[in-house]
Length: 489
Image (cartoon, rainbow, N blue to C red; front, side):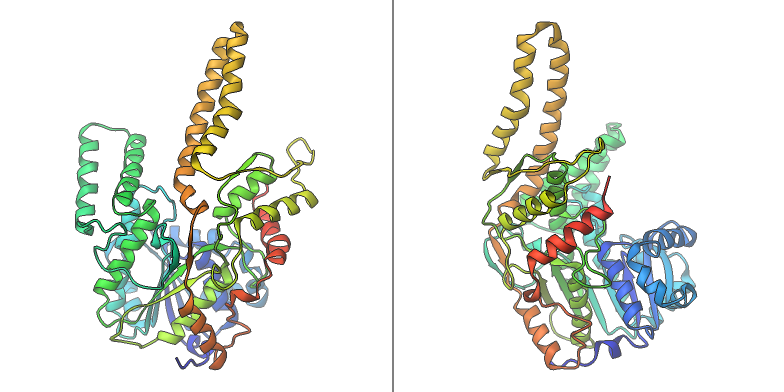
């Protein structure tokens, strides 16, 4: 693999970025504008009804974020806007939902690279929504890319967890159309669309409320995913999206990036920038606030996390590596740490304890929340038992002892029971990853890094070697403080 300069590759290049308001997309856009001011154009596709609405999203959800502060100090807004064209659209529609025919024609004639970051990441998203964005979205992006005469590369961001809950070493290999994880036959995207249409038709005929329709479509997604061996709607529809790309790419140069659990930035544009609450962060915040009294999971499970800026750097270097590479199969990269720099679940628990002991959360009453070692439960059954004993049985006992308050306690008991059912649903969705027994082979990514160091890639700018991460420093000095700073409520 012979690589040239990444900065030179980006020079005078026009890139279409879908899902431009997403977490990784913001870091990708900021990085390119900051390190290569001579990029020709970034078309940013935002889901919006019209250009005015798209511009409003761009100003508030992208340029209004802290991550762009360094860029704005370096460049004037007018200079940035010269490089950016905001496009109202929707990947779940043909032609990416771009209604302006003149703009669409211009995009098709100018675009050199397409980066597909559009996705819904909810584990239990409505099945019709998830299939539209995560599966049909890549097909529409691919169709667009095929019509670009100057196209050099299509890069699609997936997830490492399209593997389901496999054990052992998970290879960087593609999924063939119709390949179910459990070997079940009959997996067909057209059939999945038919199942959705039939379910919606039946619900409409029965005059179901919007709330009931949403609930039914969420349940349908989980049901269809598990029928074919995937644990949730998100990873199922992302796997189907990969299948679509592999099946219909023809000779198009295609790279698929599969990140693991993406966390706050390691270094650029500054350490610890994160948006929202990532998967493991919800546990950490709950613990720091004193609301989490137990952890569910195997302490020895490898928790595969990777800083967001490293994922973005792999994306850019992979684009350089595979540009104009026509006629071959798709190139797949796992971007994670479970092989190169593994970290056990127990260490992440310990980071939470150490951080919140030294920097306690201040509650609404102005008092510091004191944290301690928590109970670690190693099975779903033990977790359900713990919740029942800790929360339900005391209420039930109080209601029996004091009959004058029976009605009150019964109401409280019922409310708590509903909350526990809600928690158990979350555990059902996230539980497989708390006991995950797989590690992600990242040999392709390791080879890319070696080639980058050998060749002309500016590795000080486009770094992505997870072996250099000191997890203690990263979590205690950057990631946890970053999460708290941006989610303090």
